[in-house]
Length: 366
Ligand SMILES: Cc1cc2nc3c(=O)[nH]c(=O)nc-3n(C[C@H](O)[C@H](O)[C@H](O)COP(=O)(O)O)c2cc1C
Figure 1 (cartoon, rainbow, N blue to C red):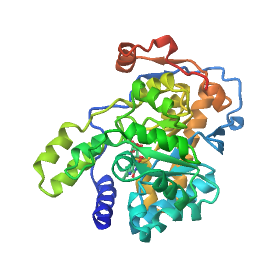
Figure 2: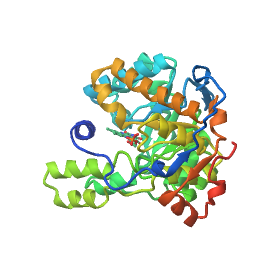
Figure 3: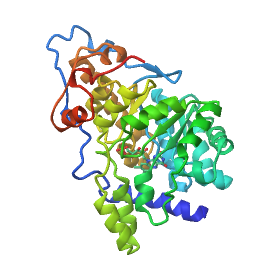
Figure 4: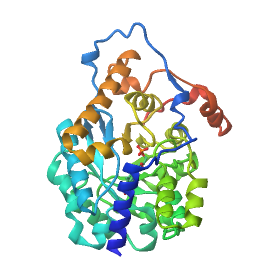
């Protein structure tokens, strides 16, 4: 069983590195989110304060590297590289699903290496929603947290991926109850995250009611898990799953839509992710009310090379955030969360049809 999961984890990394697993026709919607250029920013670019405190932790910039991997040798290297980089830059990271190490403690180091290399960074443990239905409870969730001395635990929702895999765990019945229990009983903040198909207003409201500490929308427009499963199916001549992967490649709620819906429906910190590729995307996310943004795929290749490459990629992105904040005249993250934003096109249409009025799209105070 562990070997099977290990192999699957290795496949995910190899396929993501070699094939195009990004959305094809779906976009994040950030192309419809317009920031207003300020010809008179009235501030000094180098004095802009990018730091922000979320979940009781002070991030040097409103960004962390999303959940990716663990359980294999290559994953250990990837996790170590990201951890070293985020430690030096005072940021955070998520680890991949810890199911493999909960079931087999021999591979724990591929996760705990993260805390070893990043003693003070914000580290997010990770377990899968379907496992909360089938076999895990508070005890296993605590183990995942303890394994890496995590600051928070993410429960990932990946119904799209599970539904496309032949071996997928498609029992999502009563997951919500289990999330409620976890949110009440776990000693660290519980964040619920999607994995590339987004979270709608209805689920965001339910998750707030469950008592979760944060919601990571992980919407469509970036990495597509249907695409990853398409390539896995193709390699083993499984034409049924291959066809499912192809048909559902672009499935999901665009990230910008999911972000506005969630921000407007749940009074908890919201993380913008799914196709965040530049500092402009991060800046737009915060202007729409996100507390933090996150990206995963953009750090995969650099992480296979080492921490210097990850640091370089992070510095580019954070430099872009600073630049965009300068151009919109925001001297702090808090100020950025109250600048004007114009949402146009399909994103505005979608939100209007869902009952979100353009003039009140942006931000709400926590
Ligand atoms: C190779 C790879 C492995 C991933 N593994 C996990 C995982 O184990 N747990 C999880 O919550 N999300 C996982 N994700 C999903 C990401 O955390 C993120 O939600 C998704 O990729 C969308 O963000 P992106 O477009 O920036 O990649 C993985 C993503 C990639 C690319």
